[in-house]
Image 1 (cartoon, rainbow, N blue to C red):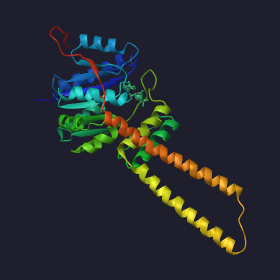
Image 2 (cartoon, protein in one colour):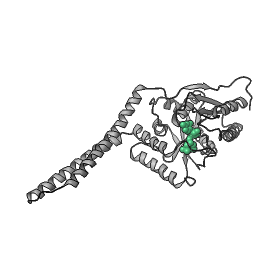
Image 3 (tube, rainbow, N blue to C red):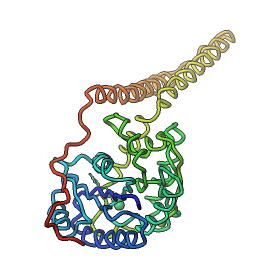
Image 4 (cartoon, helix red, strand yellow):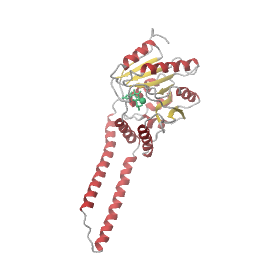
Length: 322
Ligand code: UDP
Ligand code: MG
């Protein structure tokens, strides 16, 4: 018996791409079913992340017309990571493996075959890794690669050039369910789960239609979230910084004493004002970094739910079959 695959697709205002995405996903699932690689109970699970357009209407209609499509509706917009988690947790109890992918067809659907093959070869997690960024603008490439380097330099271990296109087995999903943090940064958490992992390279395309929901400002806050939720290295760096500043102050003290012994008093409005501002700036910056962590503790201590589901579309009698 072949295993059940769920493809989890978070959608936020994706009415323009859904008809094409669903067509291609259906083709893919039917192909895999015909080849006997996946069970006939496999599904595409669209997660509606509080869209303001017709996304949910389209998902419901797809579900009515074809039993391959299922849907989960969040009570409001919770962002990509939470929508993804909601989808994976919904899929967890129904599938043997789940693949998460974006709705905009940037993740090459044909990589699904290789992921499923690796799953049968014994991998519990298979990362989709983009082979090149030729199609990205220079700016996106520069910022995105900088993002992975910064993350790793800060001690937040992530898979280079892997976004959220990945396969996870049921037991990997059960592992993920045990990470209870409210601020879940999936790309950093999934490598912590362990098990045997594999990678599949794919060419990331351009967004099929509509526009990116990740402008630069969101990307920066995403990077900040990622670093502070995975590593305490920034706090250690403050300690190091304090030590360096202290050493510099000792050097300056020795220097001024020597000059004074040589009969010379150093005048210095400029040096005074510059160092006061420099140190003041560093202190404020350090407080900001520490504050970021305290904010995290504050939010985590409340343990609020990460997502709330309004509705999950289940298979019904009388539903149009494939
Ligand atoms: N998305 C979501 N909730 C949000 C923002 C985005 O579920 O608040 C989904 C979106 O529909 C898409 C995926 O996350 O399926 C990735 O978003 P997008 O393609 O806009 O990001 P980019 O590829 O530009 O980084
Ligand atoms: Mg995209």
